[in-house]
Each structure stands twice: as C-alpha cells, then as structure tokens.
Amino acid sequence: MDKQSAKKLKVTKIVTQKRPGRYNVYINDHYAFPVSEEVMIKFGIFKDSELDQNQINQIKVADDVSKLYNKAINFISYQTRSKKEVRDKLKSFSDNLEAIDKAVEQLEQINLLNDEHYADTYVKGVVEQQNKGPLAVSRYLKQKGIADESINIAIENNYPEEAVLRNGENQAKKVFAHNQRFPFNKRIQKTKTSLYRKGYSFDDIDTIISEMNFQGDAEQQDELLNKEGNKVWHKYRNYDDAKQRQKSKQSLYRKGFDLDDIDQFLDTKEN
Figure 1 (spheres, rainbow, N blue to C red):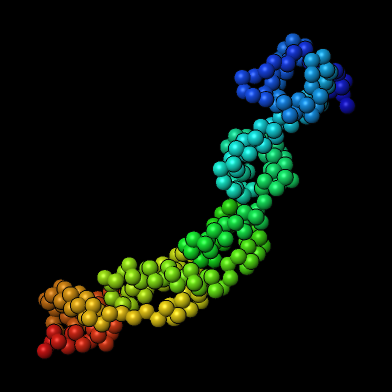
Figure 2 (spheres, rainbow, N blue to C red):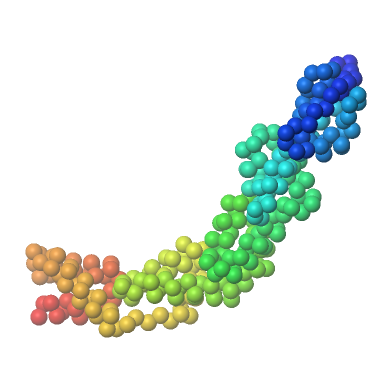
C-alpha cells in the first residue's frame, strides 16, 4: 500500500441533504463525497473519524451500489421483473457494471429477484388468460433473459398439454367465428395462422383443428361463392371461354373455395 493511500484523512463535517437518508461528507473542511445513511453506518463514518483513500474508494463504490439498489427496489415495486429487466433499467442510470452486478446480487439474496419464480408466475398467468401458446411463452421469457432450462421447467410444470389444447380450442373458436364472411377453407387457414402467431406448434394446431371439427354453413358458402364467382367471372370477361374459366377458377381457389364447388359454379356460367 502506498503512502498516499495509507494517509489518514479526517471527516470534519457531515451535512444532511434535502433527500431523506442522504448526506454530504466533508474531509479537511472540503466537500469529498455523498453517502447514504446505510453506507455511513456500515463504514462507521462520523465527525472526526479518519479514513484513508482506499476506504474512501470502497465507500464510493458501496454508495453507488446503494443508490442502484434503491432504484431497483422502486422499479420492481410496480410488478415482478426479471434480472435482465433490472440490469437494463440500472444501466440507464449508471455505467458502473460492477455496482449494477452487486445491486442485483443483493436483490437475489433476499429473493426479490428470482428468474425461476418470474417464469412460473408468467406461465401461470398465460394459462389463466388463455391468450398464448407455449412457443409464444418461450419467446417472451427469452426476451426477458430467462435461461432456457428455467423456461422449459416453467412450461412443463405449469402448462400441461391438455391446457395447451383447451386454450388453443377456445382461441380457434373465436377466430373461426370472427371470419365467417370468408369461404370455409379460408376460415380454416386464417384460424391456423392465428394459432401459429399466438405460439402454438404445428402439431398442436393440427390436433386443435381436428378436435374442433369445424363445419361450414352450406347455404352461406353458396352465397359467398355466387357473389365472388360473379365478380371474377365478370373481371375476366374479355378472355376466351377456356382462359376465362381457368383464371376464374384460380382466383376463386386462392380465395379459399373448394375446387368441386368452383367447378359446379363455373359449369353454370358456361351453360
């Protein structure tokens, strides 16, 4: 230890800040550093106490940790947060990564930060709200910095296959009903697409659609086909008969109509 670091410096004054629990420390009658009450007690800082430079450096680091800890406490008081969320938030206040790590570690030690609990809580909420499949759950938790193993355990423990299928069926029913103005095949396609976007696997989607056994309204389908069919038939009226039929058939198929139904409709237009 060099002589400069070992040199004792006397605390000549401690002044209370406007912010509760914060103080300004003066050494040799000159302002030296701010400190929290917690750190002041921890290091035994009082008027006429003596500190060397190494102690002062430790105090400053401890105070940085204390400030970040309190900011983190405020951040997590509104809702449960992951470690990554807290780290990212603290980085907006400080670039002292060592102090950030220590603040996060303190929160972990008293179980105010627990990624496994965070994952469990989130998955349980999704199952209850019935708004996402397992793949969407996994994507969300990865974005929050949760480890793959913790994600898999949380899903396995809280989102059993029967719940996945039950939630998927409820969502499929809503999507299918919402798209009733479309042809049956298009409604099925839109339902599958919606389920995929909500985080269901292809295997689960196939099972859900099969279990739901959706049926189209024959009369409604005929009305839709006649309406759309007349539009496309008119659209391609300037082509020869074969080309008009081909283009009309392709267009109606892309819209989700059944090929046999399309052929029957086109037969009526050519007769």
